[in-house]
Image (cartoon, one colour):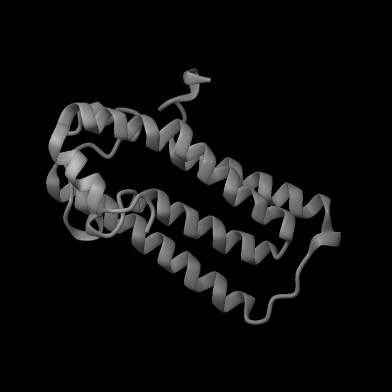
Length: 153
């Protein structure tokens, strides 16, 4: 399944996962949950997701390197400052937080399973190939960074 590596932009993957979450929640309402303060939780997760993701984009823009996730080998520098001191993938973490907010809004236990699908897909077809490309471009610098900063949090 290497043909999927670095082929589908992560925002499209996130959108598709969100659509599957909604379809699943609609199809099996018997798995709905009652969540107190649901709207507040959703708002907090959405705001956190957007902020984390945007901090990643801003860090890339400041470093004047590509934000295109399909061509990591074109990175002009290894970004290790800002939010990248805490997570190697803030843009993907932001998407995950947004999807988690969507799952809470849907309040359906089956929809939550798709969060794992999102993580596994990104890990296999996006993050793994990205890290391989960054290791080939930045060699020891990336190895050092990778050893100090976790993939998600």
